[in-house]
Length: 97
Image (cartoon, rainbow, N blue to C red; front, side, top):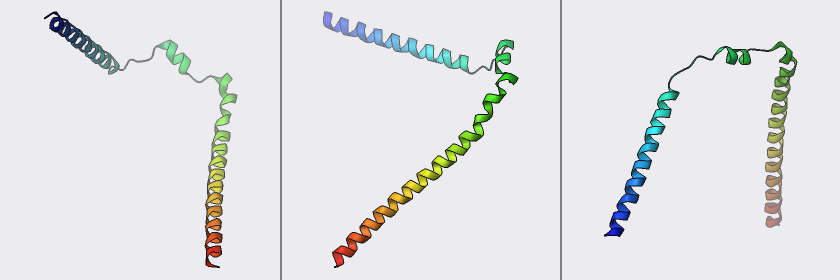
C-alpha cells in the first residue's frame, strides 16, 4: 500500500510541476506580445554615429567577394562534372574496342 501511495505522490509532483511550467510559459508569452517603445538611452545607442561611418564601407566589398565565391563554386562544380563525363566517355570508348 505504501508503494501505491508513493507512486501517486510522485505523479502528483510531476503534474503540479508541469502545470507550473505551463503557467510560467503563458505568462512569458503574454509579456512578449506588448510592444514597448525604446527609451532615450536605447534610441541614442541605435542612432547613427558619424565616427563609425568609415567602417561601414565594407558592405560593397563583401558583396563582390560573395559573387566571386559563387562564380568560383559554379566553375569548380562544372569542372568536376566535365571530368566525370570525360572519364565515363573514355571508359565507354575503351569498352567498345
